[in-house]
Image (cartoon, one colour):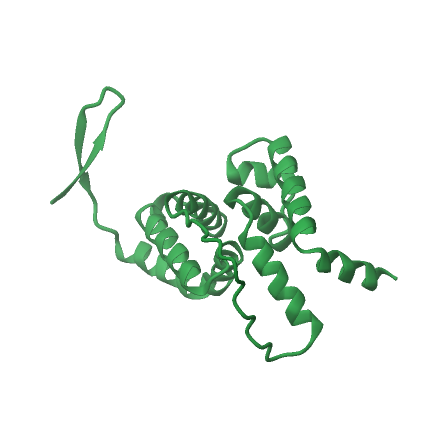
Length: 189
C-alpha cells in the first residue's frame, strides 16, 4: 500500500491511501494521449515558442492530468487549462534575464525568401517578448478561437482582465513588430 501526504487547513499532515490506476483508466488515458498529442503540442508550442520548452510543458501537463484522470470529464479542455497554467507558472519560475550588448549578432541567412516566413519569424519573436498571461490570452483568443468569457473561465480571471491583457498584448505587438501592421494593410487594399 502506498501513502500520500497532504497538509490540511490546520497544518496537519494527512496520510491517505493512493489507489493504483485501473487498466480501463490507463487505457483511456493512453488513447487520449495518442490521439490528441499533436493538437495539444501546437498549443504548447504557440505559448512557449520553442520546441523543447513546448515538449516539457506538455509532458508536465500530461503528468498532472494522469494523476487526476478518473475525475476529469472533459480531458482536452482540462489539459489545455493545465497547459496554460503550467506555462504561466513555468515562466515565473524560469525568468531569463536578457543581456544587452553593444553589437547586434549577425542575422542568420533566410533559407526561404518569401515574405510570409519573415513575417512569421517576426511574429514569433514579438510573441516571445510578451508576459505569459498576455501571450496565453492571445493564444486562447486567436489560435483556439475562445470568447473572452471562456478565456476568463479557463485562466481564472475576470472578462475585463482578459480584454485589458489582450489590448496590451496587441499594442505591444504593433509597437515591436510594425511590419505586421504594414503587411495587414497591404492585404486589405
